[in-house]
Image (cartoon, rainbow, N blue to C red; front, side):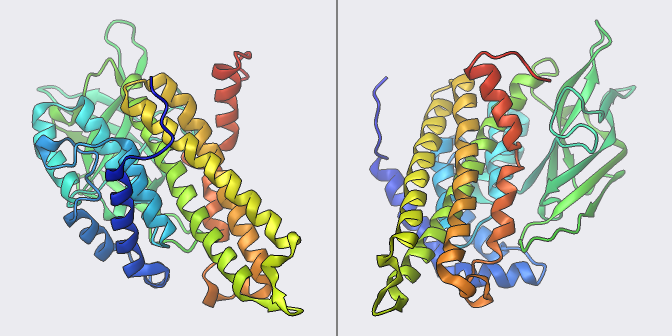
Length: 388
């Protein structure tokens, strides 16, 4: 395998075009929409029309036919421009990928052209109040209905963007007829399905994307709501979770870039004692550290994407977890240091940094906690005994 640490010209051109679109809207647009309780629909729709949201959808369904690395680049550039769209991590990355890899021909024909154009938005529901993201402990169950179809019952929590979505890809569990044991399975549930209810979770975050509790009470679905094989859901699940971690890393890296750019610009422009404050090592060195850690996180994210796009799901799993960890850590450090460089101005609304303090903290928790990443690395990378 040839190692290449530079991105192809096509991806660099994609980055440039996406960055220009993001900057044409800017953080002020994002913040206004977030504080008004709205969504970034204008930006999402334009990005969809231009093909940016569908870069990794197969070409035969109207997408760009590229890999998760290109979609991650799109996500990163929007975040770096101050216009993060959380649903990008979920809808085109998890849901479209799972359907493209494991869906029936009918499911692909029905959903993928909409993903390619950004017309379709789909949420992903795995986390439960008593199970977190442990797919072995979820209690949402799907039972076969007489005459065909399924009936879903259960609840989910911290599900992003349900109010924006056309459907939710729900992780439930079906009973193995042979063993009687429950096993994970994936179902497409329209958000207007009878028996599906969702409630917004109040959050101390300024975000244009909301979190929801989801309740499924005898939700009746047709047989073709099941995605892929009923017997291969764990493999299918991780085929979606690896892109989620890669996109989560790109999301954090983009915000880190946004914060670092603002910190560096202020350090050059703000002068005290006759010189720019960036000439003082007490500010210059921490910014330089952020730059180093940012580039390291970006390299690991690109490695994870390359492994995933090559079909190495297990190798991608290790790299994706590491990338997500590194991205979250550098985003927190970048925003904190940018605030520190600005002094009191770092918390003034005019400078657009204070609202990011809570936002980047989410990266340590979701889509998988820092502690679970460390468990993964300890167990799978270091071959240490499992701790749970």
